[in-house]
Length: 350
Ligand SMILES: NC(=O)c1ccc[n+]([C@@H]2O[C@H](COP(=O)([O-])OP(=O)(O)OC[C@H]3O[C@@H](n4cnc5c(N)ncnc54)[C@H](OP(=O)(O)O)[C@@H]3O)[C@@H](O)[C@H]2O)c1
Figure (tube, rainbow, N blue to C red):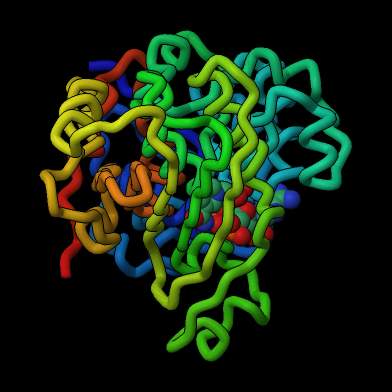
Protein backbone atom coordinates (compact mmCIF):
# COMPACT_ATOMS: atom_id res chain seq x y z
CA UNK A 1 0.00 0.00 0.00
CA UNK A 2 1.27 3.52 -0.85
CA UNK A 3 2.86 5.47 1.95
CA UNK A 4 2.85 9.22 1.76
CA UNK A 5 5.52 11.44 3.29
CA UNK A 6 4.37 14.30 5.48
CA UNK A 7 5.91 17.36 7.05
CA UNK A 8 4.67 19.22 10.09
CA UNK A 9 5.66 22.84 10.60
CA UNK A 10 5.15 23.84 14.22
CA UNK A 11 5.49 20.44 15.89
CA UNK A 12 6.14 22.01 19.30
CA UNK A 13 2.78 23.78 19.53
CA UNK A 14 -0.30 22.18 21.02
CA UNK A 15 -1.80 21.46 17.61
CA UNK A 16 1.50 20.10 16.29
CA UNK A 17 1.92 17.91 19.33
CA UNK A 18 -1.57 16.46 18.85
CA UNK A 19 -0.92 15.80 15.18
CA UNK A 20 2.31 13.95 15.99
CA UNK A 21 0.34 11.79 18.44
CA UNK A 22 -2.24 10.95 15.77
CA UNK A 23 0.38 10.20 13.13
CA UNK A 24 2.02 7.54 15.29
CA UNK A 25 -0.97 5.35 14.48
CA UNK A 26 -1.15 6.10 10.75
CA UNK A 27 0.14 3.32 8.54
CA UNK A 28 -0.09 5.28 5.28
CA UNK A 29 1.21 8.73 6.18
CA UNK A 30 4.75 8.81 7.49
CA UNK A 31 5.92 11.93 9.28
CA UNK A 32 9.38 12.61 7.84
CA UNK A 33 9.86 16.27 8.81
CA UNK A 34 8.82 18.07 11.98
CA UNK A 35 9.95 21.64 12.50
CA UNK A 36 10.44 24.21 15.21
CA UNK A 37 12.76 27.21 15.19
CA UNK A 38 13.46 27.04 18.91
CA UNK A 39 13.77 23.25 19.38
CA UNK A 40 15.55 22.18 16.19
CA UNK A 41 18.07 19.44 16.89
CA UNK A 42 16.05 17.71 19.60
CA UNK A 43 14.12 14.52 18.99
CA UNK A 44 10.37 14.37 19.38
CA UNK A 45 10.66 12.18 22.47
CA UNK A 46 13.09 14.69 24.04
CA UNK A 47 10.16 17.07 24.07
CA UNK A 48 7.27 14.64 24.30
CA UNK A 49 8.07 11.56 26.37
CA UNK A 50 4.55 10.30 25.59
CA UNK A 51 5.98 9.43 22.15
CA UNK A 52 8.70 7.20 23.61
CA UNK A 53 8.66 3.81 21.94
CA UNK A 54 6.60 5.00 18.99
CA UNK A 55 7.78 5.21 15.39
CA UNK A 56 8.23 8.97 15.80
CA UNK A 57 10.25 8.99 19.02
CA UNK A 58 13.64 9.57 17.40
CA UNK A 59 12.56 11.92 14.63
CA UNK A 60 14.88 14.92 14.83
CA UNK A 61 13.21 18.33 14.76
CA UNK A 62 14.51 20.60 12.01
CA UNK A 63 14.32 24.29 11.15
CA UNK A 64 11.39 25.13 8.86
CA UNK A 65 12.88 25.18 5.37
CA UNK A 66 10.47 25.16 2.42
CA UNK A 67 13.06 23.67 0.04
CA UNK A 68 13.78 20.78 2.38
CA UNK A 69 10.08 20.23 3.10
CA UNK A 70 9.22 20.28 -0.59
CA UNK A 71 11.97 17.84 -1.45
CA UNK A 72 11.00 15.39 1.32
CA UNK A 73 7.20 15.61 1.54
CA UNK A 74 4.02 14.92 -0.42
CA UNK A 75 1.96 16.96 2.00
CA UNK A 76 2.76 19.50 4.70
CA UNK A 77 0.71 20.52 7.73
CA UNK A 78 1.17 24.11 8.83
CA UNK A 79 0.47 24.28 12.56
CA UNK A 80 1.80 27.81 12.96
CA UNK A 81 0.24 31.15 13.89
CA UNK A 82 -1.90 33.06 11.39
CA UNK A 83 0.13 35.53 9.36
CA UNK A 84 2.99 33.01 9.24
CA UNK A 85 1.36 30.21 7.32
CA UNK A 86 0.55 32.14 4.15
CA UNK A 87 4.18 32.57 3.04
CA UNK A 88 5.12 28.97 3.77
CA UNK A 89 1.96 27.74 2.01
CA UNK A 90 2.75 29.74 -1.11
CA UNK A 91 6.30 28.42 -1.29
CA UNK A 92 5.18 24.83 -0.88
CA UNK A 93 2.31 25.07 -3.35
CA UNK A 94 4.65 26.51 -5.97
CA UNK A 95 6.74 23.36 -5.52
CA UNK A 96 3.59 21.21 -6.00
CA UNK A 97 3.35 20.08 -2.40
CA UNK A 98 -0.14 19.79 -0.91
CA UNK A 99 -0.82 21.90 2.15
CA UNK A 100 -3.18 21.66 5.09
CA UNK A 101 -3.08 24.98 6.88
CA UNK A 102 -4.34 24.90 10.47
CA UNK A 103 -4.16 28.67 10.81
CA UNK A 104 -6.76 31.21 9.76
CA UNK A 105 -4.78 32.46 6.75
CA UNK A 106 -6.91 30.87 4.03
CA UNK A 107 -10.28 30.41 5.74
CA UNK A 108 -11.84 33.73 4.82
CA UNK A 109 -12.82 34.17 1.19
CA UNK A 110 -12.42 37.94 1.27
CA UNK A 111 -8.91 39.28 1.99
CA UNK A 112 -10.45 42.57 3.12
CA UNK A 113 -12.39 40.74 5.82
CA UNK A 114 -9.14 38.98 6.82
CA UNK A 115 -7.39 42.35 7.06
CA UNK A 116 -10.21 43.80 9.11
CA UNK A 117 -10.36 40.98 11.70
CA UNK A 118 -6.71 39.92 11.81
CA UNK A 119 -5.12 43.34 11.36
CA UNK A 120 -2.91 42.08 8.53
CA UNK A 121 -2.81 42.59 4.79
CA UNK A 122 -2.99 39.18 3.11
CA UNK A 123 0.24 38.61 1.18
CA UNK A 124 -1.07 35.73 -0.96
CA UNK A 125 -4.65 36.75 -1.85
CA UNK A 126 -4.51 34.87 -5.16
CA UNK A 127 -4.28 31.57 -3.31
CA UNK A 128 -7.46 32.14 -1.31
CA UNK A 129 -9.78 31.21 -4.17
CA UNK A 130 -8.14 27.79 -4.49
CA UNK A 131 -8.30 27.00 -0.78
CA UNK A 132 -11.06 24.61 0.28
CA UNK A 133 -12.63 25.05 3.70
CA UNK A 134 -11.73 21.79 5.41
CA UNK A 135 -14.92 20.69 7.10
CA UNK A 136 -15.30 17.10 5.83
CA UNK A 137 -19.02 16.83 6.62
CA UNK A 138 -19.73 19.69 4.23
CA UNK A 139 -16.93 19.71 1.69
CA UNK A 140 -15.45 16.21 1.40
CA UNK A 141 -15.71 16.04 -2.39
CA UNK A 142 -13.93 19.35 -2.88
CA UNK A 143 -11.28 18.51 -0.28
CA UNK A 144 -10.36 15.38 -2.25
CA UNK A 145 -9.20 17.54 -5.18
CA UNK A 146 -7.65 20.36 -3.17
CA UNK A 147 -4.00 21.34 -3.14
CA UNK A 148 -4.62 23.74 -0.26
CA UNK A 149 -7.05 23.09 2.57
CA UNK A 150 -7.90 25.78 5.09
CA UNK A 151 -8.54 23.82 8.24
CA UNK A 152 -11.46 25.39 10.13
CA UNK A 153 -11.07 27.08 13.47
CA UNK A 154 -12.00 25.17 16.61
CA UNK A 155 -14.95 27.32 17.66
CA UNK A 156 -16.27 27.52 14.07
CA UNK A 157 -16.19 23.73 13.76
CA UNK A 158 -18.57 23.41 16.71
CA UNK A 159 -20.78 26.32 15.69
CA UNK A 160 -21.14 25.34 12.04
CA UNK A 161 -21.80 21.64 12.67
CA UNK A 162 -24.35 22.60 15.34
CA UNK A 163 -26.35 24.88 13.07
CA UNK A 164 -25.95 23.19 9.69
CA UNK A 165 -29.07 20.93 9.77
CA UNK A 166 -31.32 23.65 11.23
CA UNK A 167 -30.29 26.24 8.64
CA UNK A 168 -30.33 23.78 5.77
CA UNK A 169 -33.91 22.80 6.61
CA UNK A 170 -34.91 26.43 7.22
CA UNK A 171 -36.08 25.65 10.77
CA UNK A 172 -34.84 28.78 12.47
CA UNK A 173 -34.97 32.53 12.16
CA UNK A 174 -31.63 33.64 10.76
CA UNK A 175 -31.60 36.89 12.72
CA UNK A 176 -30.80 36.94 16.41
CA UNK A 177 -28.74 33.73 16.55
CA UNK A 178 -26.53 33.68 19.64
CA UNK A 179 -23.56 31.31 19.83
CA UNK A 180 -22.20 31.04 23.34
CA UNK A 181 -18.90 29.12 23.33
CA UNK A 182 -16.49 27.98 26.00
CA UNK A 183 -12.98 26.65 25.41
CA UNK A 184 -10.21 25.04 27.44
CA UNK A 185 -6.92 26.91 27.78
CA UNK A 186 -5.00 24.93 25.12
CA UNK A 187 -7.09 26.83 22.56
CA UNK A 188 -4.79 29.82 23.06
CA UNK A 189 -1.68 27.84 22.09
CA UNK A 190 1.48 27.01 24.00
CA UNK A 191 3.14 30.40 23.80
CA UNK A 192 3.71 32.08 27.14
CA UNK A 193 1.19 34.74 28.07
CA UNK A 194 -0.12 35.91 31.41
CA UNK A 195 -3.76 35.14 30.64
CA UNK A 196 -2.92 31.46 30.18
CA UNK A 197 -0.99 31.03 33.44
CA UNK A 198 -2.31 28.37 35.82
CA UNK A 199 -3.36 30.86 38.49
CA UNK A 200 -5.13 33.03 35.93
CA UNK A 201 -7.19 30.17 34.48
CA UNK A 202 -7.63 27.61 37.23
CA UNK A 203 -10.56 27.78 39.64
CA UNK A 204 -12.22 30.62 37.78
CA UNK A 205 -14.31 31.22 34.65
CA UNK A 206 -14.40 34.29 32.46
CA UNK A 207 -15.75 35.69 29.24
CA UNK A 208 -13.43 37.28 26.69
CA UNK A 209 -13.62 39.00 23.29
CA UNK A 210 -17.41 39.31 23.49
CA UNK A 211 -18.77 40.39 20.14
CA UNK A 212 -15.33 40.64 18.58
CA UNK A 213 -13.72 37.21 18.45
CA UNK A 214 -11.76 36.60 15.23
CA UNK A 215 -13.69 33.44 14.50
CA UNK A 216 -16.89 35.46 13.97
CA UNK A 217 -16.42 36.17 10.23
CA UNK A 218 -15.51 32.53 9.57
CA UNK A 219 -18.68 31.33 11.27
CA UNK A 220 -20.79 33.92 9.44
CA UNK A 221 -19.17 33.09 6.09
CA UNK A 222 -19.96 29.39 6.33
CA UNK A 223 -23.42 29.76 7.87
CA UNK A 224 -24.31 32.24 5.11
CA UNK A 225 -23.40 29.66 2.47
CA UNK A 226 -25.60 27.08 4.18
CA UNK A 227 -28.53 29.46 4.66
CA UNK A 228 -28.20 30.99 1.19
CA UNK A 229 -28.27 34.50 2.64
CA UNK A 230 -25.94 36.82 4.55
CA UNK A 231 -26.00 36.00 8.25
CA UNK A 232 -24.86 38.06 11.18
CA UNK A 233 -24.52 36.17 14.45
CA UNK A 234 -23.67 37.09 18.00
CA UNK A 235 -20.66 34.91 18.79
CA UNK A 236 -19.24 35.03 22.30
CA UNK A 237 -16.40 33.19 23.99
CA UNK A 238 -15.40 32.07 27.48
CA UNK A 239 -12.29 30.49 28.94
CA UNK A 240 -12.85 27.25 30.85
CA UNK A 241 -10.44 26.17 33.59
CA UNK A 242 -9.64 22.93 31.73
CA UNK A 243 -6.89 21.96 29.30
CA UNK A 244 -8.98 20.92 26.33
CA UNK A 245 -12.52 20.87 25.04
CA UNK A 246 -15.09 23.25 23.59
CA UNK A 247 -18.76 23.47 24.46
CA UNK A 248 -20.86 25.73 22.24
CA UNK A 249 -24.47 26.46 23.10
CA UNK A 250 -26.44 28.11 20.31
CA UNK A 251 -29.75 29.85 20.86
CA UNK A 252 -32.11 30.21 17.89
CA UNK A 253 -35.80 31.01 17.39
CA UNK A 254 -37.87 28.39 15.60
CA UNK A 255 -39.82 29.55 12.56
CA UNK A 256 -42.72 27.29 13.50
CA UNK A 257 -43.66 25.03 16.37
CA UNK A 258 -41.69 21.79 16.25
CA UNK A 259 -41.43 18.71 18.46
CA UNK A 260 -38.03 17.77 19.81
CA UNK A 261 -38.21 14.28 18.31
CA UNK A 262 -38.76 15.78 14.86
CA UNK A 263 -35.68 17.98 15.25
CA UNK A 264 -33.60 15.07 16.51
CA UNK A 265 -34.80 13.02 13.53
CA UNK A 266 -33.83 15.78 11.12
CA UNK A 267 -30.37 16.21 12.64
CA UNK A 268 -29.80 12.44 12.69
CA UNK A 269 -30.74 12.23 9.03
CA UNK A 270 -28.48 15.16 8.10
CA UNK A 271 -25.52 13.41 9.74
CA UNK A 272 -26.45 9.82 8.91
CA UNK A 273 -23.27 9.29 6.90
CA UNK A 274 -20.97 11.44 9.06
CA UNK A 275 -18.83 9.09 11.15
CA UNK A 276 -17.97 11.59 13.86
CA UNK A 277 -21.13 13.62 14.43
CA UNK A 278 -23.21 12.02 17.16
CA UNK A 279 -26.73 13.37 17.61
CA UNK A 280 -27.60 12.50 21.19
CA UNK A 281 -30.88 11.08 22.38
CA UNK A 282 -33.62 13.25 23.89
CA UNK A 283 -32.62 14.43 27.36
CA UNK A 284 -28.89 13.83 26.92
CA UNK A 285 -26.59 16.82 26.57
CA UNK A 286 -22.96 16.75 25.43
CA UNK A 287 -20.00 17.09 27.74
CA UNK A 288 -16.41 17.84 26.77
CA UNK A 289 -15.14 14.70 28.52
CA UNK A 290 -17.14 12.39 26.22
CA UNK A 291 -15.26 13.70 23.18
CA UNK A 292 -11.82 14.31 24.69
CA UNK A 293 -8.99 13.39 22.32
CA UNK A 294 -11.39 12.34 19.55
CA UNK A 295 -12.96 13.47 16.31
CA UNK A 296 -16.47 13.37 17.73
CA UNK A 297 -18.79 16.33 17.60
CA UNK A 298 -21.58 15.52 20.03
CA UNK A 299 -24.81 17.44 19.51
CA UNK A 300 -27.59 17.73 22.07
CA UNK A 301 -30.89 19.37 21.19
CA UNK A 302 -33.52 21.12 23.28
CA UNK A 303 -36.79 22.64 22.13
CA UNK A 304 -37.77 25.28 24.65
CA UNK A 305 -41.49 25.55 23.80
CA UNK A 306 -42.04 28.42 26.26
CA UNK A 307 -39.65 30.74 24.40
CA UNK A 308 -40.02 28.97 21.03
CA UNK A 309 -36.30 28.37 20.88
CA UNK A 310 -34.20 25.59 19.47
CA UNK A 311 -31.11 25.29 21.65
CA UNK A 312 -28.20 23.35 20.19
CA UNK A 313 -25.34 22.20 22.39
CA UNK A 314 -22.14 20.96 20.72
CA UNK A 315 -19.05 19.49 22.31
CA UNK A 316 -15.76 18.94 20.52
CA UNK A 317 -12.13 18.52 21.47
CA UNK A 318 -10.44 21.72 20.29
CA UNK A 319 -7.09 20.07 19.59
CA UNK A 320 -8.27 16.92 17.86
CA UNK A 321 -11.60 17.64 16.15
CA UNK A 322 -11.02 21.39 16.19
CA UNK A 323 -7.48 21.28 14.80
CA UNK A 324 -5.17 18.32 14.22
CA UNK A 325 -7.61 15.44 13.85
CA UNK A 326 -9.57 17.47 11.35
CA UNK A 327 -6.33 18.35 9.55
CA UNK A 328 -5.52 14.66 9.33
CA UNK A 329 -9.02 13.84 8.04
CA UNK A 330 -8.45 16.44 5.33
CA UNK A 331 -5.05 15.00 4.46
CA UNK A 332 -6.59 11.53 4.25
CA UNK A 333 -9.13 12.84 1.75
CA UNK A 334 -6.53 14.77 -0.27
CA UNK A 335 -4.34 11.66 -0.55
CA UNK A 336 -7.21 9.37 -1.57
CA UNK A 337 -7.23 7.49 1.74
CA UNK A 338 -10.19 6.57 3.89
CA UNK A 339 -11.15 9.75 5.75
CA UNK A 340 -11.15 7.88 9.06
CA UNK A 341 -7.63 6.44 8.79
CA UNK A 342 -5.98 6.75 12.24
CA UNK A 343 -8.97 8.70 13.49
CA UNK A 344 -11.23 6.09 15.02
CA UNK A 345 -10.33 7.26 18.49
CA UNK A 346 -12.09 6.45 21.72
CA UNK A 347 -12.57 9.28 24.22
CA UNK A 348 -10.07 9.64 27.06
CA UNK A 349 -12.46 9.45 30.03
CA UNK A 350 -12.96 10.41 32.77
N1 LIG B 1 -4.74 25.33 19.91
C1 LIG B 1 -5.89 25.06 19.35
O1 LIG B 1 -6.84 24.57 20.00
C2 LIG B 1 -6.10 25.34 17.88
C3 LIG B 1 -7.31 24.96 17.30
C4 LIG B 1 -7.53 25.22 15.95
C5 LIG B 1 -6.56 25.87 15.21
N2 LIG B 1 -5.41 26.25 15.80
C6 LIG B 1 -4.43 26.95 14.97
O2 LIG B 1 -3.30 26.11 14.76
C7 LIG B 1 -2.11 26.90 14.68
C8 LIG B 1 -1.14 26.39 15.76
O3 LIG B 1 -1.79 26.55 17.01
P1 LIG B 1 -1.11 26.10 18.39
O4 LIG B 1 -2.15 26.30 19.42
O5 LIG B 1 -0.47 24.79 18.22
O6 LIG B 1 0.03 27.23 18.52
P2 LIG B 1 1.31 27.22 19.45
O7 LIG B 1 1.09 26.27 20.57
O8 LIG B 1 1.59 28.64 19.75
O9 LIG B 1 2.46 26.63 18.50
C9 LIG B 1 2.92 27.31 17.37
C10 LIG B 1 3.98 26.48 16.66
O10 LIG B 1 4.40 27.18 15.48
C11 LIG B 1 5.83 27.37 15.52
N3 LIG B 1 6.06 28.71 14.95
C12 LIG B 1 5.69 29.89 15.50
N4 LIG B 1 6.02 30.91 14.68
C13 LIG B 1 6.60 30.34 13.59
C14 LIG B 1 7.17 30.88 12.41
N5 LIG B 1 7.21 32.21 12.18
N6 LIG B 1 7.68 30.03 11.49
C15 LIG B 1 7.66 28.68 11.71
N7 LIG B 1 7.14 28.11 12.84
C16 LIG B 1 6.63 28.95 13.76
C17 LIG B 1 6.21 27.26 16.98
O11 LIG B 1 7.53 26.76 17.14
P3 LIG B 1 8.82 27.70 17.03
O12 LIG B 1 8.42 29.05 17.54
O13 LIG B 1 9.86 27.01 17.87
O14 LIG B 1 9.18 27.71 15.58
C18 LIG B 1 5.23 26.20 17.48
O15 LIG B 1 5.71 24.91 17.21
C19 LIG B 1 -2.53 28.35 14.93
O16 LIG B 1 -2.69 29.01 13.70
C20 LIG B 1 -3.87 28.21 15.63
O17 LIG B 1 -4.72 29.31 15.45
C21 LIG B 1 -5.13 25.99 17.11
